[in-house]
Amino acid sequence: MFPAPTASDNTVIWTARPSQWLNAPTFFVVALAVPLSIIGLPWPFSMVGLVFVLPALWSYLVVRCTRYTLTARHLRIEFGVLTRHTEEVELYRIEDTGLASPFFLRLVGLGNLYVLGSDRSTPRILLQAVPNTEGKRQQLRDQVEAARRAKGVRVIE
Image (cartoon, rainbow, N blue to C red; front, top):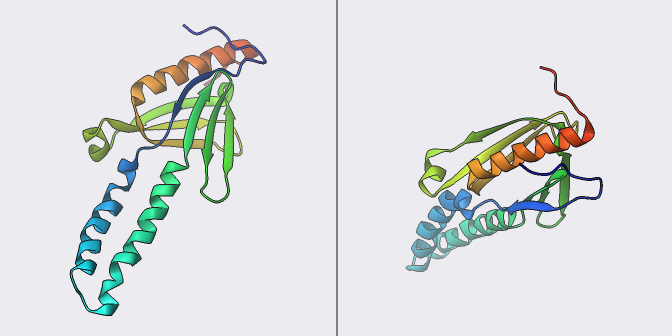
């Protein structure tokens, strides 16, 4: 379906970010706590809203600063708010993939994609709350097969 990647071919197949729906429970608590602290509670209790806002802001930034990229040769995960980290897995090292669609994420059309590989630094990868999970998984599998053919790698089970 896809041509075999060449050594210099690093074409981006897809890019995704986790959805902020991962933070829905946190945002819900903040939506309840902030109005309660504003409506005139005594001083120490009025700070409760701030206590909930800061972790919610951090959760937002963690999700916002995460990106998944599938190229013709690699699966790349970039993450980190203050310090950026990049993990790359060669596609021919990927052994298996799986899908999980928790009820809450399924309601909003999202799912989780699991990737298992033989890479020592990142043997398990979880792509959380991405849209079109089945389509992304199929594209990943097609690229893995193309990368294996190009490298001459055979998987023995």
